[in-house]
Length: 254
Image 1 (cartoon, one colour):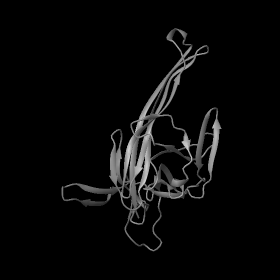
Image 2 (tube, one colour):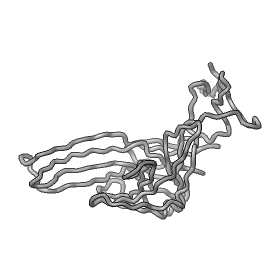
Image 3 (cartoon, helix red, strand yellow):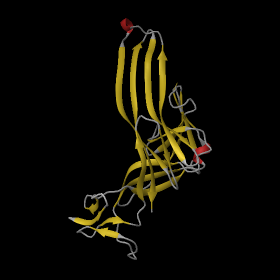
Image 4 (cartoon, rainbow, N blue to C red):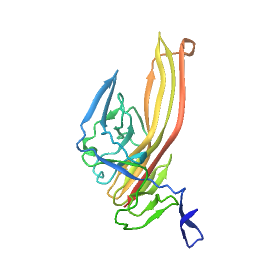
């Protein structure tokens, strides 16, 4: 059953029915008041910003992003939104990309007070809505009386989505960068007598923000082991790989 159908000039159609879903803003978390946590694991040093826990009602978050507006005066950066190195919940990790988009460099997560002073984390997802109290705006209901579309909802509007190629996106108003995934592989040979030889490599989006646009590069971050391990000395060999690199630039219309 179709509840709303708008025909376009090129014989296309916009249909809103039981299958209609659109991401909307579920929460905005300013980073300015979040204290940076620093921790050491072996010889590796991590810095991250732990986000507060949010209890959702009738909503399902599916994607997280970092606001870019106002970051034109900060140096290039990369970031992750994931579970902290120890513990649960969601944390923001920043990585320095001063080596440039095509360079190879081992980068640990770093403190970025210049970014967190201005940026916020946005959480997008699907929300079950009730009818507007004052019945203002446009609302579309399904056969069960549930709200399928509401003009009051801050729905996401995609400005660009990409993968390996460098791209520059022009933006206005609130603009959010979302990491869709990373490429990673490990190829290591290990000997108790001669140490470890090989590489651990992660590729994630790097961002350069100007006054009205953002340029996205694929940043390669490597950990290289250079001990003298020959094939006949190998006691253990590790190889793994997964490829899911991507990014999404969006804004939202309320």
